[in-house]
Length: 352
Image (spheres, rainbow, N blue to C red):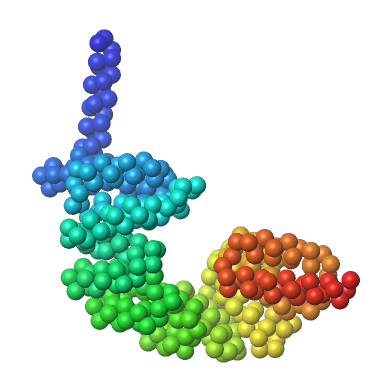
């Protein structure tokens, strides 16, 4: 080995050690405090992939997690990440099939060994929900609650698999409140479950009885507007939305909440007989809102429902947009789109 190569390697080694020392000092770690310090770079790598999204090398993350799993099969953080990774593998790595069987195998081992904390329980519940084993998920959830490590993510994960089970969702919500876990996501999920199952009165009652901080949050206020529209409180909703919109001064049509509120308002106008005002409102939204906005398909459907006579150009443009969004939206929105297409096609027959 030449002197030059040797010096270069020494410098490289010193550089790595310096970086480790600086990192350790920055994070407040010491070798005594953290015996696993040599693994820090692995932990940070996993966190970068999962939590920060700085890179999307999930195959590289898998290799790192498996190495750590082999070294320490009782490490709860590693187990939870491995289960989460395999549960969502087909979404994380486009073009590859799911790995639910592998995720379930790790779950069963973890539960058999009694390795469970909040992170593991959250991952296990999510997996069991994905493969339709609700009873097993419920057993893990109950164990987490009785063992005292059920935190907001555990309650959220259990609530997420109860979309068609409002009774269970109510039990989870009541248990969370009893254990002083008041979290925005829990309110959002319970309201979404009630909304999906047509329990609009119950949902409004939840909002009315919620803490003021949650009640006043933009997200919950928007949920409330949607519920009031479903309960046919149109004029009241329009009045409250006007008050809500007054809070927005700049960049209005680039703001998701602002667009959402104005869309609800336009639908309320349409339903309460103020059709001309609704057409104006939908026209403004259609002109100013980007097509990539979540609410744009709903806006063009409302415009179609309101406007009894469309020009040939409007019909062509709307049909092109509706056909496109019809392929990429959920069931409830697709029904609206299908109805809007039928209306346009009916107008074409009359004018043709």
